[in-house]
Amino acid sequence: MKKILLGTTALVSAGLIAGPALASDPLTVTVGGTVTAGFYAIDADDVFGVGFNDTAVKLVARNIDIKAEGTLDNGMVAGVLATLSLGDDWNTNYNNNDAVFRELFAYLEGGFGRFEIGGTDGSAFKMHYTSPWFVPGNGVDSPNILNGLTSYYGFGLRHSTFSLMAADANKVTYFTPRFAGFQLGLSYTPETTFNGPNPNGLGLVPNNTSIEDVFEVALNYAGSFGSVDFGVDGFYVTGDAPAGGASDPEEIGFGANLGLAGFTLGGAWYQSEDLGVFGVSTPLPGAFGVEEEVWTVGLSYATGPWTVGVAYLEDEITSGIGGADIKTWQAGGGYNLGSGVDIGLDLQMSDTDATGFFGPGAEQESKSAGLVLSVSF
Image (cartoon, rainbow, N blue to C red):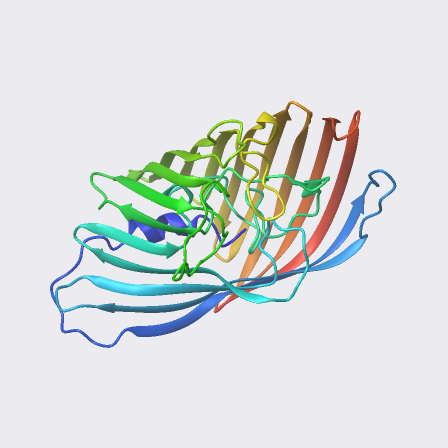
């Protein structure tokens, strides 16, 4: 979706206790990121007479990060992270080649914890565990590459157990230091008009034009018991619906990972009410009283440069005008060639059934196989 997702938990967990005070130096600027590309053969059924590609080249230019960071005289760490994306985010239905900063935020880190302010994901997103990624640059939960339906009649299909209510809108977030393996995260987003960094330096944003006053609370645990690594999280997110919304939207989710002898077993569960399916670029709060439930489970095994695995995700949407049920399987793996270069095999199978407004028993199936190259720098 936006990054190799499991890496975010480690980022938030580490380095929250500052070391001894050091003399200030200019902030160090680094540039890095990941580009993933794949060539796929696709077998997809038509939907209402509309055909689909039988072959495709998928290019994901994400995580091009420009980072400035340094240690202050008082021992605190300060920095800025700007994430550049080429083209659309995963949840849009338009095609373009615009280069935009999807995230831009500043942070302070020390013995007090970590404070972030700006356009970035909130605590519920960053502290979440889910099914493992084993194909280079791609996974079944919040995929970068998905060869199934991503929308019906303009209604986006979620394919994610992560909190997306406030997405990358401007917010403030606080992470506590980790105590006995536990860490708490809190986020507040005044308004979500823009799904990305919004300068908002001049003028005011009208009330009741988007979801407002979004509060996130997340708690996770990371630790080891002998040779077993364990991580678990839970989150709750709520916001105020705009004018005409049926009721205030809510999200709740849980996730867990278990690691032993190269194996990683992971899964997650998510539910939202009155948020609406993720639309063209923004949530549809209160749309038709939509309720959505997503769950995923997966198993991976890594040894040396090899990683293989299998994972499953199911998304069920219900509303007053119909619903949809999306089932997606992924299998495959990757091989690390060294220096951040990975190649892999990505096998996907997706099945979508829709009812009501979407048509009686409308169904779409797709199967695909792809060779993937992912380069991190």
